[in-house]
Length: 290
Image 1 (cartoon, rainbow, N blue to C red):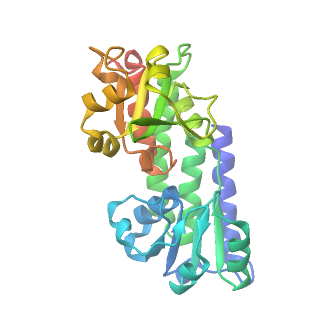
Image 2 (image 1 turned 90 degrees about the vertical axis):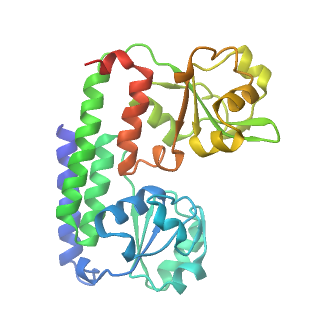
Image 3 (image 1 turned 180 degrees about the horizontal axis):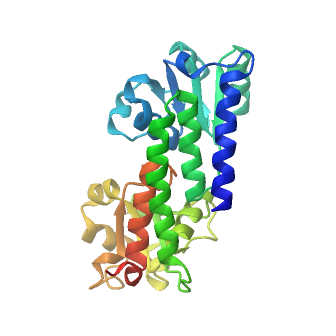
């Protein structure tokens, strides 16, 4: 818990600097926010409401209301003109904001850009919430939300302490033209699996890679993870598993297909804590008995 306390102190110190340094944008002056990154968008919405958000990137899908907001493009390929047209007081984004040339161009206009980057763990999630809360002048709301997220992740770590088996999880992003598209080695994915007590079955894949039914059937992951909407659009769980060639391997094991909301699970935003805990419960039910 020492690292958690240090993170908290750092966030509080940053908030104090924000309010006292010459030329700093005071929290009470922030009325119009543009968000880039699903984690940032969810945090801002939870702390200050959707009404303060003027625009979001295409990865931001929670809460559902933000989908209707003006788009600033993909997180790594933002639109400078689109952002400036929204006249924001601040752009709050996660570490993947890009390209760098667009970020530099935005900074040259005088727009304040706050990059939110914290470790991919429970302490980092809570510290991120507190940091955004300090930016928005919503410290009280942030403290309550960060405490809830921190408690969920601390309980999860306690339950999984000493776990030696790490079930292999295969992330299927989509089935395009009958060919499954598997998610490979990615920081957010690997960190999520690690916190849930699992391992990446496709850890030797570069980002996204087509994988054949034959390969999946020959060496089936212990679990398949997919977005619930993707499974539904494919025709349901039975059709989805059939297209993966896993009908036989998963026969009598309906719990091995994990349908979730990937827009928040891999985001390390507030909702991710409960989703990671739910995934862990699926992987290690004995640790949650009673």
